[in-house]
Amino acid sequence: MEIVEILALLPHRYPFLLIDRVLHADEKTFRALKNVTFNEPHFQGHFPGYPIMPGVLILEAMAQAAVGTIAKQPSFKPGGLVFLVGVEEARFKKPVVPGDTLILEGELLLFRRGLGKVAVRALVEGEERASARLSFVVREGAE
Image 1 (cartoon, one colour):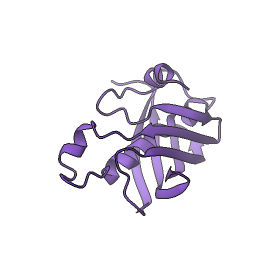
Image 2 (cartoon, rainbow, N blue to C red; image 1 turned 90 degrees about the vertical axis):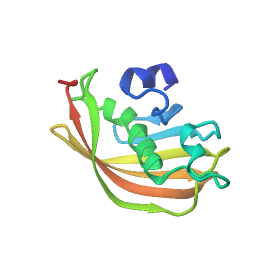
Image 3 (cartoon, one colour; image 1 turned 60 degrees about the vertical axis):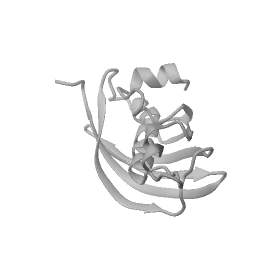
Image 4 (cartoon, rainbow, N blue to C red; image 1 turned 60 degrees about the horizontal axis):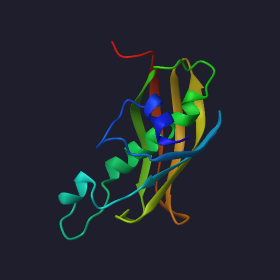
């Protein structure tokens, strides 16, 4: 899934669109890519002299990566919005820095009546940097 397709599914835009490509998505699994670059605004202050991607942004990238699988659910309607509602078992093992290619991969654990849960990992060169279980709710557009 190229960026144009991602933009059609996610309401996020610069500087908060945190995935560059969905490499794979079916009804159960997903894999997405985020190129981490020094010109991203958070690196100015996190941290000067030692730029690392904030953990909360890694979690957000994980959540955005799941959209490909969520959109493949039979009950998902185009224009629906996906809201992150819970984070469990988040672990950060090693920093993500400018120049890294972050691979976000996961599995849909549950999806019923617009509520769901995914297990996600963030990898750099095959090494796990972070993991979490994320809960979400799908709404049929903003009110």
